[in-house]
Image (tube, rainbow, N blue to C red; front, side):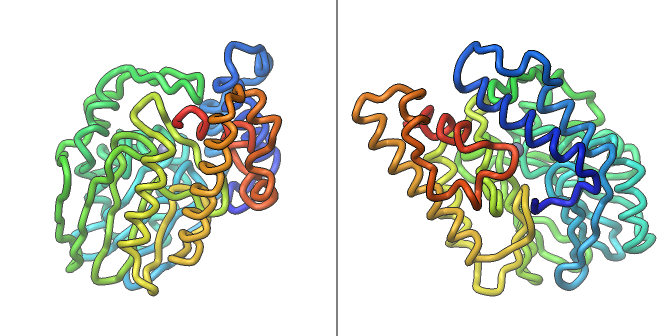
Length: 318
Ligand SMILES: [Zn+2]
């Protein structure tokens, strides 16, 4: 297990529910999960019990792990700037973690994309003092009821205080705490709202869910994601990273160019395998049965997206 949850039972529940649900949604209307509570409530429950791990990265930048996606924190005289918000149930634990870094007030929040495990904490962070910045599609998706088929879940429109106030289309540059921060939109990749957040002076970047370090990614076709978009985003990240870049994936441990290269290579290899099977006319069930991910499952198949579910996510896009 790569992520910090602090609770082994809830972690197992996440793994089970996530794999079954993602698989069920892809495989059609089968009753694979009638007794499961569902991946979104399970993720929330896991976050509620999680300890938040604080890891200093470089200069005045740290990462908080344990509530949904990884959270970057930049500190300084302009107040704290967070990249991603975790789940709102983690407010006490995240508040304690932020306080353990220093007493700087919370002043700014950037969302890497619209998904709930990165934005559910928006409302409380805004009430605590954060002005929210994101891609325009993050605001668009959060503003209305939004269905994610892969999670079998419809998210209600977020309250106005949770919505990003500053949005952009392609690129945006901020200066906080004597640090230049470049926000850049990918083309649709994991969703249609993904951005990178690059602290250029420190050479630290948060790439959101365009990168899952060491685990199969979820790809949200319901809001614009695709396997080819995901591969293109991995290539864009490789072009952006230096040999010294410290990169925060959306999920999994902090890493760099070597780990990202492995991720890109895995995506490309499995896409190639699945495409060959689909071209032969094999159904999704037949493609899953042929195990096109087999060489990668031991390393990558241990988190939310199971080998079968990931095969389905790739199959859907080619
Ligand atoms: Zn996501």
